[in-house]
Length: 324
Image (tube, rainbow, N blue to C red; front, side, top):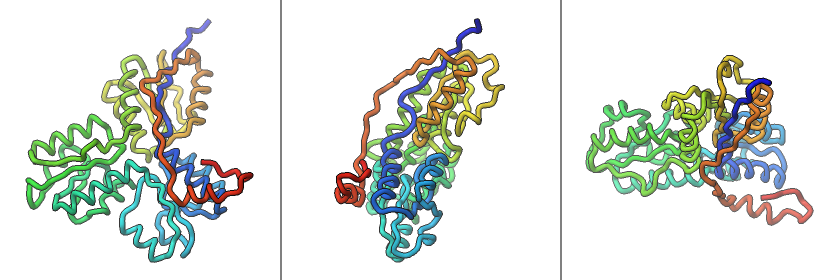
């Protein structure tokens, strides 16, 4: 009999509360109002989610200028800048805002610090939709840094009036290093009352750290444009564990499994569970049939729906299929 190999299935994994909320908003909007429903950018960074919603009638656009006047448009979970909101207003678009409440928190902090006369340092990735939206709240006083080395180039009018914020989906360890570099350069720098990195990003990274020493290989289900998914790979590799980001089971290369006895499997916050199940099935066919689900910490967060969706649910006939 061939030796049984182990699959460590990490929990929590996959969808976070902000992603569940955003996807629900699009689905309910399609059911309540009927297609077409326009969505600015990818509602969440996962191509399978986007393709499924497209099949139901969602139309994804890069700019609100691509939305016909007067139509409904949903803002993605990553948030938008005031400039986007103004363009929507000029086009008389009917807005449904699916911005994650934890991203909104960062926007509110940016506005607050800017009004109080602070220069802002936004820790994150310049080309990420979330950072672009947050920076738009106070573009003239905000600088983006993505590494401790970039802190050297930060120049501000008053070193005693500096504040930092962070993208919600960063590596905890890397962010800690950047904040440390900022504190050394600006000893009086202020930060948010509570960290901006979201609970789901932190929990999934903690889970990876928990099993990294026990696994020969970590597989992370998630799309390449998913920041939090890519960070999970980086966390594992920093602990010298081989790790790869995969969209689905078809991305797994046979050579990755050679000599491997224990695989750990997780998923980024925008990856659907059915993709994880397909990976589990594939690994089972490769001998990884000793499946151990490890719940590192419970996760029971839920966010309320925006008023437009709540009203649509309330207005639906009792026999309708619209569900929260």
